[in-house]
Every structure is written in C-alpha cells, then in structure tokens.
Amino acid sequence: MKSKMLLIFVMSFGLSGWSQASNNTQPNLATPYQKSFQAVWDTAGQGEMPIYECGSVVGTASKMVAEKQDKNNEAQQAYKACYVDAFLHYSDSYFALRDNSVIGEDNKPRGCMLFARYLKMSTSSLAVYADRFNLSLNDLNKQIVEGFGEAASLCQNTFD
Image (cartoon, rainbow, N blue to C red; front, side):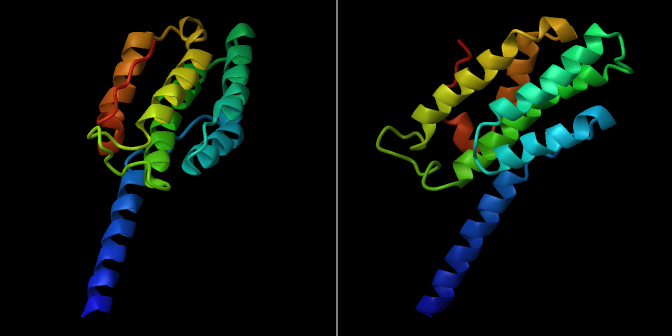
C-alpha cells in the first residue's frame, strides 16, 4: 500500500513538473534563426538563463534589419522569441528544478529571490534592442507576466 502511494505521489509530481515545463511551445522561426534559437531553447529548458545564446539570435536579427534583408518581420519575431518565449520556457524549467517551487515561510516559492534577479538581468540585457524591432517593452513585459506559470506568478516580479 505504501509503495503504491509513493508511486502515485512520484508520478503526480513528475507529471505536474512535466506539464509546467511544457506550457510554452518553441516558436517556429525563419531559417536564419532556427539553429541559434535551438541553442536558446535547449539552455532555457535546462533551467539556465540563455542570455549568451540570445545574443547570437538578436545579433543576427539586428544585422538582418541593418542590411535591410529582413523579410516579413522575421527579425522582430526572433527578438520577441528571445525576450518573451525563451524567458517563459526558462521560467517553467527553473521552477521545475530542485525545490524552487516549494512554498517557503513567506508564502512564496523558494526560488523567487533568484528568479527576480534573473528576470531583471534577462530583460535589461535585451531591452535596448526593442526599439530597433519596433516593439514596446511594456507590451513584451506584459506578455511575460501573462505567460508565467503558477510558481513564477507568486513571486514579486518587476522589470526595473
């Protein structure tokens, strides 16, 4: 009986973690961005900040815009994928790891303090490029907040 209860507990925990980590789907980007964005997605899926990997994607997107080779706002889509989608994937993965989503004495997940720092670090490193792609930081930040999973939404999240 105890082993069945333990198995049910482990299965439900595993499935809930899996489901939290798959709330956000990988965007389908144009060919120039696919390989470098795959590195972004993989890094974020490991609960690691993909800041350096996003630098490659945003660098390519900036070059395409500067050289007037951007088609159908593909560069804008690649930038948004790093700013919003990759961070949400990271967020889900981060809270699925270790004990980051366990509620602490302050009624917030244990991972909130570091998560708040990572949020600021990620968004501030990419924010300077938003105008280049004709995107509003307020709109992008709103999309991030709206896409947060349960654990991330319990944290005090600010973008400044």
